[in-house]
Amino acid sequence: MPAKIFRDPLYNYISIDRERDGWLLELLDTPEVQRLRRIHQLGVSYLTYPGADHNRLAHSLGVVYLMQQALNHLQVPAAGEHINRARAPLLAAALIHDVGHGPFSHLFEPCLGIDHEVWSKKIILCEDQDTHVNRVLKEVDPSLPRTVADLIDKDNVEQPSWMRYLLSSQLDMDRLDYLRRDSLFTGAGYGHFDFFRLLNTFELYTSGDGGREIVWPEKAMLAVEEYIFARYYMYQNVYLHKTTRGFEKMLEAMWRRARALHAGGAKLALVPSLRDFWATSEPTVQQYLRLEEFTVLMQIQNWTQNSDKALSDLARRFLARERFAMIDPPPAKAGLAPTNAPWEAALHDLVKKAGYDPEMYCLKDQVKAKYNQPYFPEKEADEQSVKNAIRIMVNGKPVEVSTLLERLKPLTQVPVDRVRYYIPKDLHARAKKLQADWR
Image (cartoon, rainbow, N blue to C red; front, side):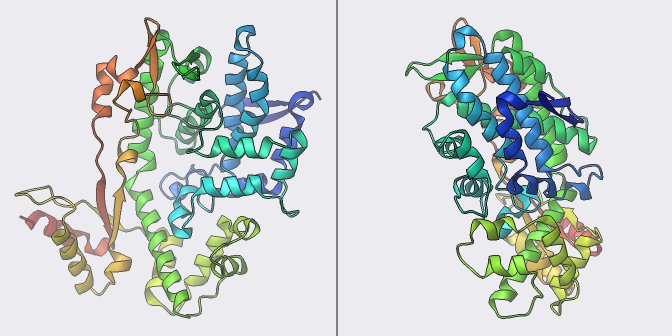
């Protein structure tokens, strides 16, 4: 067959041309990429949305599909030869941009003290004989591993801006896939927008310094608006769902406790891959890749029998889906900020008096402002690009979209952090009374 066909619930069919892009199938079959089948796209969101069992590999294939469509859209005579040269780096980056994710995706980054993009680059550049990604890329072009690593690096500016922005920007192929895919699998109806119009109307705009950037015509303006609102609703209703965040905080607390006990010499019945990872300050790529979700779940299962009461209890609660209750700080009054230390200290005291260790049973969730308000464009026009603002062509000049649509103005105000707390459910009524009496 001239093409390899994948059946996908979002796009129906994803096709890879064996003659033109056969190397992409080799890259897909590497153990490092196949490992993504065993990593949930949405971390522990399946504890909130039972259907959210999709994995990072399915998402990565979806990004490949969208990148193919974007390149086909650009593949016109006026685009020039540079589009052809960009094909292999962009398709490779689309497939392996998430290869460095750890167990439960973003959730485990604070647990392991990692940045998945850093590990993605390490895996891509690793030349050890036990890894395969680097070797497949080099067979296509000796310089391809470095080019792909640069594209994935959010701080790297070596590659053309239009290429970097297709992969990572305010409106990129990664976001176009995960918003719709996560909406589908959670059953939430918030991730719908006209992705076809966004994919088939963007243009390359030559900026003052001669670089090419991505912009959209006025006819795509409402599709952009729809996308921004879908992104906002998905964050508020899915990614930051209180139940999901509660289990994330529980897992993080469990991991902190285990690390502290391990540092003190306690016996934790560690599974071999975790024992090796914790045994060194600089884990190898192979040591990192051996950390998978089934490894973590087996470790949590072991901890249910641990002699440390708090560790074993949290492990049991997590596996049994025995969630904590969420409580917001009291509203600001008389100069008291909602995250003020006295309120937090009072809540800690309530938990402690009930016989719980506040470090493990009073969990603070501080949602960073950038997640609480996902679209926040750069305000200065001369500093705007698709990296930090979505721009519409008006009279031959790019204009940031929220300046054209009043409905988007509320989404572009200065974002603020959001704080909430998670405590055992049997303390929730007392905590609510404390909150009501807080003056």
